[in-house]
Length: 173
Image (cartoon, rainbow, N blue to C red; front, side, top):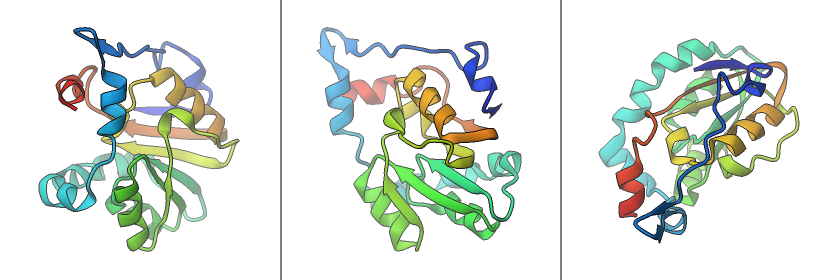
């Protein structure tokens, strides 16, 4: 997905989906929030292929030297390092303290950030997200926060699993 700041206003491009937070009478949001903290070491051991697959969307982003970029759901910072290597000023935001610590250990500007509660105001030329949006069930809040975070003419480049792709994981958590 590649969106300009202005395209985010249109539900045609980013539907304002409301997450179904109940499954069989259980409040899955509480369970999901408890399971949101990924362990960086386990992620590196079991899912290191995920950032490797993100190289394609890095090409779509085409980061430029001097740009300010938010990596939303940055994880341990593997892809974030590539944005920095391109000369961008990058905030590596993630909701997991373990992932933020791993990003900081790489020398990155790692910050604990809830993608559903972004509070930036026209701070970024681009927002980038790889393999993270499907963990943020309130798409309307995420897209509104991304819109606010982008400068006029800014772009949002992201990929995520299809609708419902982590539903079974959320229920299990």
